[in-house]
Image (cartoon, rainbow, N blue to C red; front, side, top):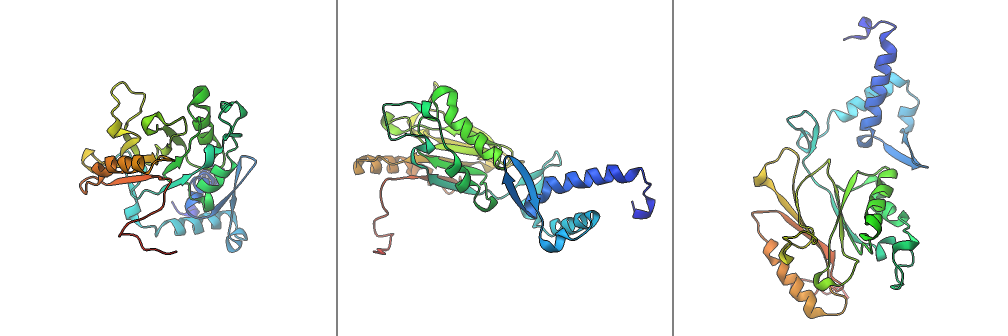
Length: 270
């Protein structure tokens, strides 16, 4: 439909639709600023001076040359992810206030400012975020893990689904947690340690696929945390993970080993 075909009554409807389009896809084109739970779009100076309909045209041109191999469509016609961004970091006590005090539960609450700052650095928000030391995240109805996901969502992040893991030898309630964006990846399996058929070899194992992919395109993600005191136990845990070194199934193992790299495969940079 050309501009000469538009009637006056069509303009408000088209303007609302174009504005919705811009707000929905602006993450690919322009930066976001998040303040007090409200999302605002920051336009480049050369775009800010344009009229509203001209901004939409600039945005459309910017969207058009994107690599189609990274943005295919599913059978339902929705955009699907074809490359996954993973991230891992060890967050001391999972931001639990007073977490170093083992005589208290999670009643002191959490401060998720650090988690939001790291996960959303420069608007990154990885599709799958692995975090160490989810201290007491399963207490009080999962307060820690659900509030962490909510804090990231409020800050403009992804709608993460928290998957709380466990530690070998019942080490304590500060196991890793995996935050997965279920709108970007399809979760096929999560081996919860509380399941009746749980096996230690599947500890903290997530099995997923990309949207639109079949069972033959699964990948695996494992979160772990090395024993704080025993090198022998860390070695035993590492050996148990060797089974995931199967080139037929892509696998990612991420964790804090409470150790430093060593051996002939590492260069001494001291």
